Length: 581
Image (tube, rainbow, N blue to C red; front, side, top):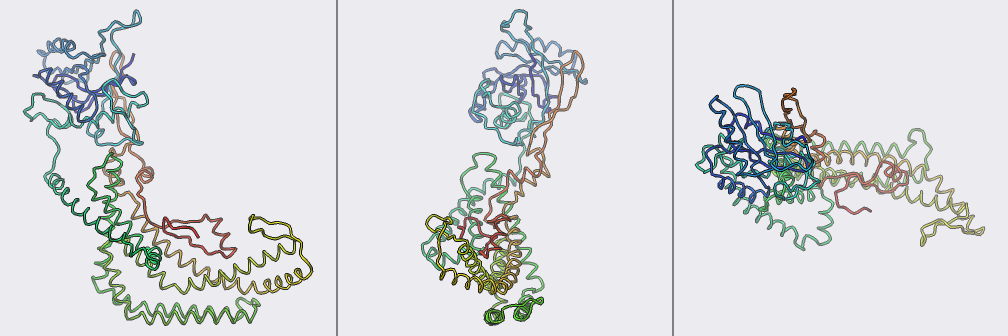
């Protein structure tokens, strides 16, 4: 039988002692965590293992002995170590030995019980696998394995070997809190034997984070209670707030801050990673917003922008006026219905003049509006982009009205033509059963239907041309707003902290492991080096992507083209959670 012994590389030069770790019988593996040095009292060693089990819910045991022969006189130490197996009974009993200044290793796994099969050997072959204990402790294996709380030797059959190794090291963190400088009764060698890693700034931040989080959590709860007031749920306010992108972004930012400053401790590494991603996303968003604000306030760029906005709006209105006058003539040499063409053209020109008057009426307040937009960048670049998207929606409200008028008129004619076409075929639409049924019509009904069908057919090109032009303008505005919403969604949902870990410390996000052969000679134990394979960047984004309130397409391309052809109103960029019309 071949046993796998996972041995930490940090203990390869440690003094002789006992091997402490966990035995996984289903994988025939022994995970060595530390080396207990002389002198020690066996009862104190057992008490230490019980404390680690109580803290991390992982059962540890003395797996065997470790002999590091530094001098020739220490060869007698091996006989003393072999006798420790009677005090710490474990099956199998590992005996690892290394010669000083050489690469020669000897590994044995002995059993005191009589083998069930006659002639079976009392010793098992051992395959030694070295691993970096610090990297394995700080890494997270993906997908995370849900291992049960079990004692040594009671692992679940479904727990994989690698998952058991990672989980054992992660749950044994209490064992690594002591180093060789402690005055405790038991001296250990592990990855923190030369001193526990600590930082004064980190300790101060940990102590100050508790009161700060409590205070901010109380303030955020007050803001949430104020936003949930019934006054804001009345019809005018609720309708307006549901249509503004900045309200959705502020609500999402409130949820992010509530998650970050929550006093509830993260239950697993996934929740901790989500908190870190949200915190880094908020910090980056605020930093970009402050950079935008400093750029706007640096050389007083708000004033020139406000002064240039009204001429740009006048130029857009003038171009739209030329477009309407072109449509009222013979566009592209097409023969239009002159009466309907003149009615539609004058109707849209009247709305265009109303919009120009609205812009000139708002011109004295434009600079102050832009100043407040720049000031809102203190809350983050996403808030400023959301306000800018709402401003674009207000400034292009006339284009939206043109699109709605043209779409409704075009849809009315399409529905009328389809109904009259069913009349010629002796069919009708059954509203109750939602299907097409046969129907018999008299001569008068067919005559009236023929007249209406002819009128609608000859008026359709004029209406379709206006609908096509204003639909293209509407799609242009929607595309600009969609790019802004996609940028907001990218900032809100991108897991920046996880990507930073993948870039700077790839071992923190482990997709698996690979083994490199260190020694493979006849008569010697096979020695391997376990190395961590980092998680690919695509899987990092897919695994840790944050939820966002950003826009998303509500229709596939086929459905969108069908709606455009039949004149149905489209809202390709909607906030998450909005009801479909």
